[in-house]
Amino acid sequence: MHGVREELLDRQGKSVGIHLEKVLIPYPCPNVVYEEKMRKVLSQWKKKGVTHVIFGDLFLEDIRKYREANLAQLDLTPIFPVWGRDTASLAEDMLKVGFRAILTCVDPKKLDAKFAGRQFDNTLLKDLPPSVDPCGENGEFHTFVYDGPIFREPIPVEVGESVSRDGFQFADVLLKR
Image (tube, rainbow, N blue to C red; front, side, top):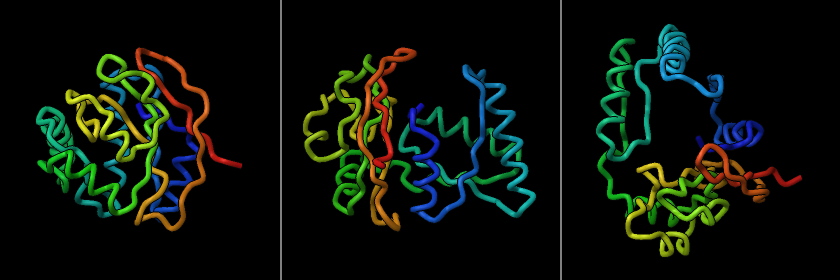
């Protein structure tokens, strides 16, 4: 959904110092296929001793219940560390501590497509219409984080072409060479 190049995800994992488990899914991907692939990967991690799975969801009850139900089938415990946080305060806090991100995907039914490719910064937060959640929690936008306090080094990126695809506006984020 974020429309981010795989090489950027690899760099992000390396800079943060975590191993990324990529779950490859077909396009389009029926939910039953998605759930089957996720169940397989999570089952493998459970065999290695994993007991909890962390999510960044903020307030969408239906999404939380969906995650809880799927993890219950595997006897895994979901953790929602930012659940219920005020999203305006959370967005400001993320900027204050130094996180830097780019809007990679915009739902033009909820936010003007011109926002694709913009920096997630104080100016963006001021420019968002009141109907748009500052963290994009209702699917208004998705981001790629390329720097912040948990990064060993920033990922050098630049914004490339912006394209409309499948009802969304995507900004291609490129690794600066």
